[in-house]
Length: 357
Image 1 (tube, rainbow, N blue to C red):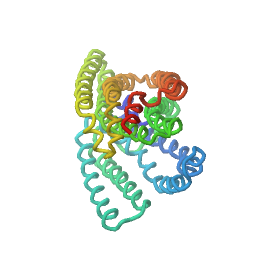
Image 2: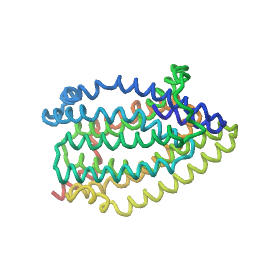
Image 3: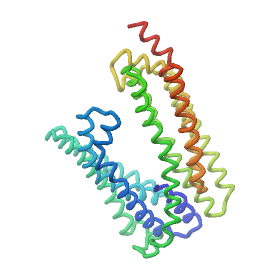
Image 4: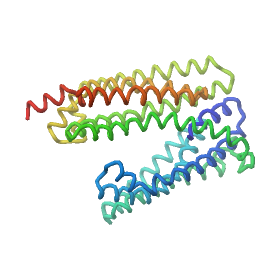
């Protein structure tokens, strides 16, 4: 939902309406805070929901405990995501990098003290996460309020309470657009668990999704940069500049996609050893490397178009596209091929492993 700021603050910065950026930031805080309260039942009732989904009772109950203690981190996202985009729209990416780097150092130190030395339980581990996220928020907030953004931050204003409904609609569309895409990959793991009891196959798929997730951080960065740059150019009335930014982002992302895909195809077994030592799992990951490489290449292109959509304010349109492509086409097709037609994860991979066994 914070992606609405990329559209509005990006255009305001391009149009040199700097005073509106602080207003948009405060409106986003209001909308996201209320939305976070609405989402609280997901955390409070996590244990019974997980049991209903078929998770083992001990796992569901422990996850429920973690969900309760992770609520502070949930509320930190209200400020963390919005402040990050607020800075990005002003091209203050160096500030974000410095604060993030400092927080990571503190977080690693806390983990060493509390987890390694004091051996705290799962609640203690969760609290270290809460502390780190709020530390990031506190530092960014102080930088913003105490002189770091003199042109865009002019203090708290009552204007933030005006036009909330229109702001909510854009924020909601932004949230749905990104949620439909990101949740899809989590659903894949859950569905895979229901349609196969082959632990090797599930482990291999989880490894592929982890590699995919790591690699996705770079396209996601380009997604944010593209959306903000396009919004800046449109705010300044420079449509040719927005078009040029789109082309350059596509070119850079495509080249990176080729590099990552080539690495996956060249070293499929080496990548799997980062996560597992089982020969069966490593060999299945190697068998799936072709599909993973193709997915990585496409994933380096798709976020750029999403970034362009954010810059133009087309979040509602992309939300419908994501719904159709991922859930009305992708998910049913996967279930039909994997379960009804018996293809499984990849017939060749499973058969070759069973022959060796």
